[in-house]
Length: 320
Image (cartoon, rainbow, N blue to C red):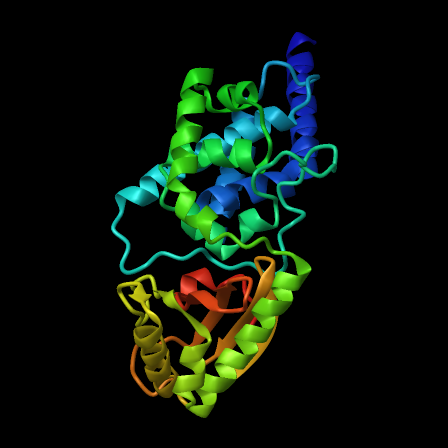
């Protein structure tokens, strides 16, 4: 009888945890994606979080389980990020893009806006933000996401990451200092900004397709930066290309090598307009698919160009 009661309690605990996990799955995935920047890693860490919950459940299942699940997920993500940073990556690193705006991932528990958050949920899922936080240490990134994106208090952050409150404050200060370059060029993803990005993207690609290099260059900020991520799987520039002249020449060369039979669709990826392209390259080891997205300033000048061509990072993107 006693053994049956123990088995029954384990089954009940498993049911409670499964229910809580399903309820908070999207929130947890959003945190993992913002921590790691790739869908594959976010999926893996989400699965590990569920297994950890079943194998080592919290002592009090009657308490709210979301804070405990967040604690498990963000610490597993932090460990995964440490492992990734130890490995050499060929060329610039870019996030794996995701269809949609991702605003409803990592949503607050009460579904209320995070009025005091430094970065909102939509901005924190953009490619530009994810590129910026990639420069942080895993601990800095975790603290920044909990406090400046999810609006955790110092005490809540310390509990989640098993740090002292003074350590959290110092880490956040350093993380914010490292984000100053991003903050100086920061443009909030408002509806007006999204319209500017979409218009600039279409016009820029039309100039390149027409071979109008001068007009394409006129759309670029003088210090524009172009990132290409092939992940060592396909050809891509191994360094960030900087400056309006070098960037437009590099992209014009790519356009010629991508072939003439290019099919493209304008979509919303990570909350902003992007072009998904099916390519017909005339050079071996050139990519067959590409996602192109831009950052533009308030005047519509292109400040950043993100070109994701690594096949492993485009698995969640629908074919053209």
